[in-house]
Image (tube, rainbow, N blue to C red; front, side, top):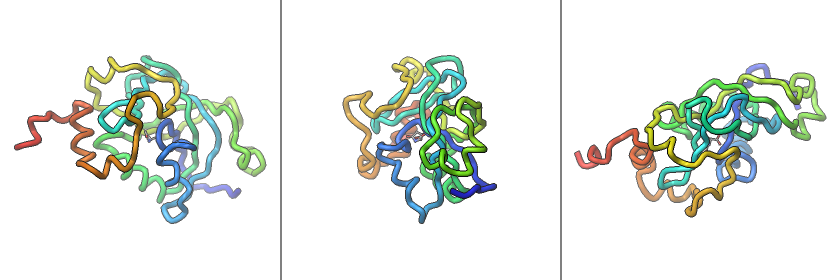
Length: 185
Ligand code: PCA
């Protein structure tokens, strides 16, 4: 595994994690490069909620509420970062925000590579994370989780449902960022 001086770090806590429906993008070399560094936990507690009609996870930018969040840390190249910004609708819905995580367990590949000199378990690392920053108070009344599993709500997240209707508009409405009455104007 080579060292990539231009790589940026992103902490993912939701559908981009391994075993979740959007992880395959991180494995698509036509999009860009993503290297799994290891599991990680945010230094600060944040509210992690699952909401909207699409049942998506959101780490809400309201430090101090909720729990330290468990997720995965990746080194990604500029092309993958561009893809993620677009995919997460940064900055209209998720906003790419600087945060700090503590590295828990290194991935097998990293353990056996030169990257293990750079990443030590237990250390605190600055990285990016896609957070929800336009907060509607009703979001903070939802249950908070420590780790996204995908089974929090009855209707599970299904990427195909986003194509069936105007995902962007309905997400803004469900998050309270846009008023439903603006729909028919
Ligand atoms: N995708 C990003 C933000 C939430 C989501 O589902 C992630 O996995 O971190």
